[in-house]
Length: 212
Image 1 (cartoon, rainbow, N blue to C red):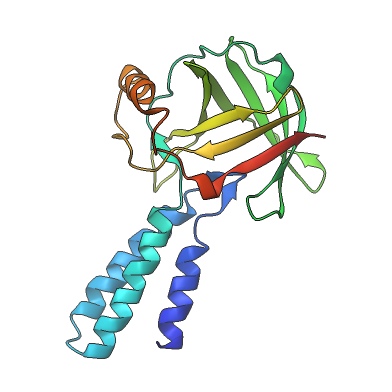
Image 2 (image 1 turned 60 degrees about the horizontal axis):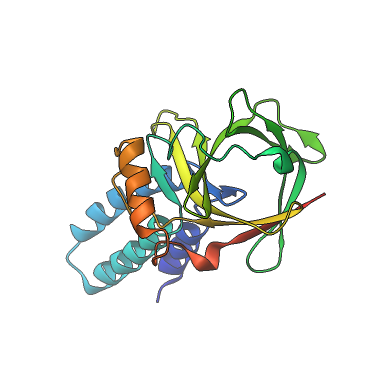
């Protein structure tokens, strides 16, 4: 395999940085460039170019499968209201054991809503990420809002929250494309109600959080 192909695969695998477990729009920006490059390569009728294009496509697949489910609407307006235990500082740990991001959580303006501030180099971000918590059966789901930009529309990343007592919890993303991004809150909630115990989670992307 050429160094060129290896380089692009590595770039694709790293192209979905998260704010914690949450994807940013960087992955989607690079997807556009990948597909343009693939189209150009396939105009070159050589075996080498076709092999390289296949490696690029595999790299794109890594990007596509690396993000949580993103929808235009939250699961609901905040049916999990016992959020007092979440306020405070939380330190993340990734599935591979490396240190994750640090956050400060405050109560939101409505029941079942919280504000999450990223902490970088000891400084709290000026703008919080709104998060809605939902109760479905005996499970807690979060809808973490991501602002849109010139590439992507705004939306919510949907994840399962597994409470481990008042001082620890895990976050596990729901698989991307499990349900249409344009689904209504009722459709999302109904789908989760029917499938919450099924194979809908990215188990190897779980992140652990402990109160700091």
